[in-house]
Length: 104
Image 1 (cartoon, rainbow, N blue to C red):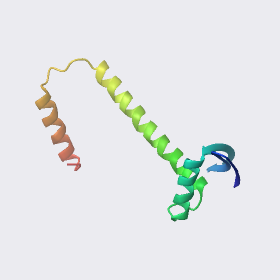
Image 2: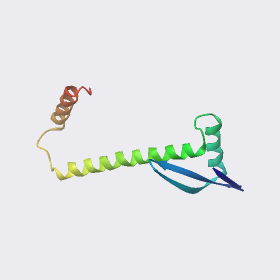
Image 3: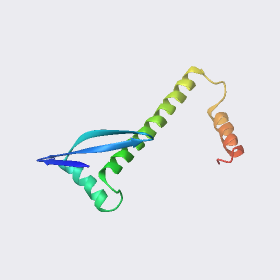
């Protein structure tokens, strides 16, 4: 890992490995963010700053996948039209389904 520290900035190069591909990226952080990452490494929470950045990227991908699934569910609901069932009936039906599936 390469570090260059300038007033108010910290630049470092990370290597991202995902399956077979490895890509080097150069990222610039403020001193505040750099100090934060260094404190996480010093505490033992992460082995190095690259590990922390990779985890952030993975979490962001997961969050975006969940958000996309939610958008798709909303679109599906909007396209399905207005239900003739009451909200109470829909909730009761969903609760019964969750109980059958062992999720409630």
